Length: 342
Image 1 (cartoon, helix red, strand yellow):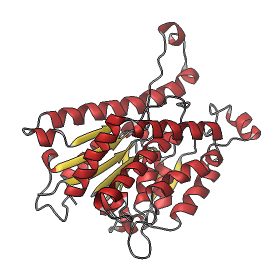
Image 2 (cartoon, helix red, strand yellow):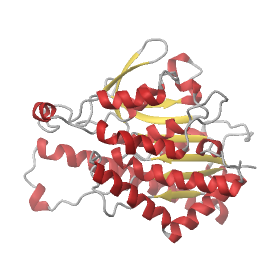
Image 3 (cartoon, one colour):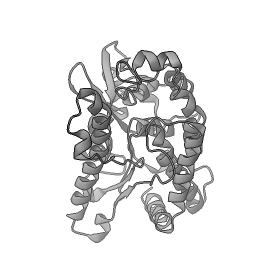
């Protein structure tokens, strides 16, 4: 019986370039191994999950063309970051003064981000996407996680414009204003970045898949029935000495707390999934969870450093990562599994 193939992509701001290029390399291998030069990421996964920048990437892979085939290649998707990143994370002098560099107000004006999302997703609805997906955000009015689910969107209550889903999942506190989005029946939601609780959404995807049925599965899948590919954004927790932080107050802790929450969330999710798969009886099943974490070597790890120089460094770091012999071999293994389970 074929495995349920799951792709999960972490949040991480402009560092979305890293998993974006990993997906470019994976798509190239899928095309070469399958003999289909038009193969796309969406063709080889049954469920996609994303948070923040990972949510935007996941949604972009699922945009249909007029023939209900994926509109974008993986390269098209990462080009959105390389071409629009500097505009999205651009701050003029007035915004810098008014916001106190993110202390008193959001650091960036959301208009450039919204324009990029509008140009990409137009008026597409969640229900229009090609495959099931789960995208994380947090509902600040009702104080609970909010997951957008394409596979539930045939019900108008759960149907949203895709550009609003992308805006909500990437509304990182202190960086962008909270998103106010409306479902198809007119209910409003105030949402922020899902990275606050699920920066690595792989566990959310696993849990969601346990309650779903798929065309090639006659019952609800468990871990042994899933192939999970989880891709990070080079998250690194900065270290802080006790002498430096012991007298910090609310202002000093704001940014470090967000970074710690996002990086810690990713690490904890990987830990739990690794343990879940380690308990499986058969070695082949144990090896069906893959975590790819690109390394940031030359680029600035800040989520919002979108200077042309740093964009190119992020691209170079990602290319160095996928060119590593061990990573290249793992991508070959993943590709063969994805094709075998198609």
